[in-house]
Image (cartoon, rainbow, N blue to C red; front, side, top):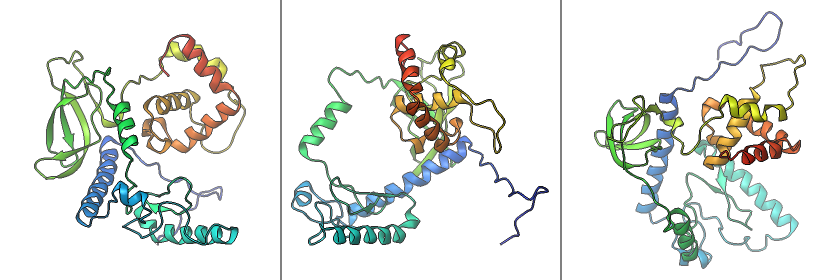
Length: 295
């Protein structure tokens, strides 16, 4: 291991900044999608996916053998719950290389791996409810757009019948016969009105436009910033924080999925919580709502 570098004032050297390019983000999406696809094939081939009947009958996870419904027998007292927590810690350590975290069913403390364990099946009622939410009769889904997508393998795919505003971050490459990350996408159908309609994949989230200067002028007085001297790295611009929070709320993504253009998702989450605790976020959203702006 190379020796750590020293700086003149004796402080620790600054960590290198990670450059998030469209290609690097596409490669991340590609690796996750390929891992998920491999696991789906493994689950199908080994019959690891539970039926709803088997799940409600109390059958454990077929991948790891751990309980899905209810607590294991004799583990409902304080000592038993402590044993479950210790077992969960050991399970997380065994699956640390998966890098996808763990999940558990409501009212059950037993944890399962996001990568290795199939999720429990939906009930018939849940499937119907989800179908109604995704495809309500009154919703007209415009899928008239045609895109030309550049992939990480440098091949191109033409996608017809897609949304005019959004392309999935991964695409099945017909030449490589594997899932690839999408680096760039360009509209090529006759309805394109903007001559420069190409964009990075991470910009293709639906129905969100960043705040204009005029819109920011309506709410910037609400946010109190500390202009005094401070040590450490420069703070993230508060306008970027507000934009990140509005983007996250509108698109429904998790904070970890926040595009790199908004900076650190941890910083955005922390600053957003501060705005909520100070009631500034309520005032921001109320001001935007009064002016009929999307939130």
